[in-house]
Image (cartoon, rainbow, N blue to C red; front, top):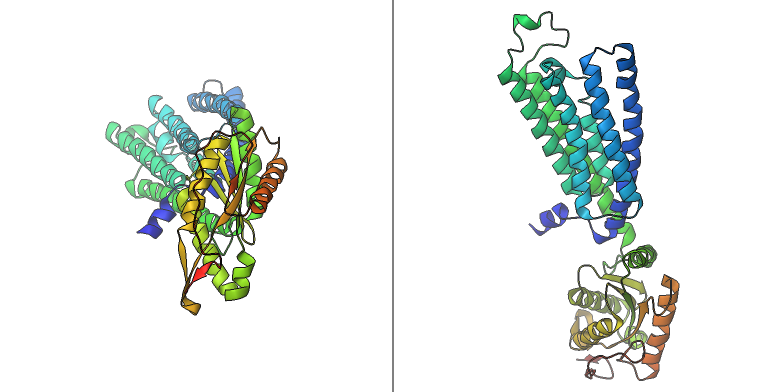
Length: 391
């Protein structure tokens, strides 16, 4: 059940920015394809101005082009929310359905249910969901397309005698339900294929963005995320707090118990950190026993308070070392920096946080050092054996 929940849940935080980039790619492709498709009804309408089907295609495509321009402008300005993928997918699918409904309104039901051009655009709309990195959007596109087209076919069959002599010689083809069910199943199959692609990409992306030992974000992807968070903070005039956390005297522990025990300890500390932060916070294994935490929309004094609670929680956590039948306790030191007060870029924040981490180490370890003159609560001392373990 947990695996299904993880598979079906929203995109991993490591994929949210990729989804935003995918939305921009879709917006560009949407506008390009619609401009190319606009040439077909435009050319046909010029050659046969009285052809109703060409007028329908021209009007529908013009509306779609205007909508595509608006979406592209919004996305290029940096606006992105997870629900945007659902909204634009619904628009893409519904525009195809609206074009088919136009034929019904013009009393051309066979064009609606036997279209060999407009119907195929459903597959473009469904395929585009695969670069949004959200399984739910893929499933939504298939369900919406199948549902809307099924309603169109059902209405056409119930409203008109589609195989009656009035439509002979059936220039737009005859109607039969096996063919219609085949079309609906093809839409569902396209959505399933998109979901399979996204599932595979999500797994590979997760592996490339995460530290294999702890499951936290790795340093390479973290740097990308940090710059994205700073860009958002500039756009919306928010503060960001960044903390660099280091496990005290970890090298001595490794020398005493070995690297396997060190790996166990790092995994437990990483899990403790994850339990202590919000889902929107960014936690990274920066290197060795060093972690970096980013708190979006957080004042430095609030970040220092969070780090104090985290410091105490880690100090109270005992890690079992099975190979040595021992338990180990750890303390951490942390330095906190804030954007924009401590710098304009990620390197500035990391450099300032690292300096304050060094101050915490110099002051005796097991401390949190933030920007000066912060109004924060009184720090409580965490007691951990100096030797970091008890048998």
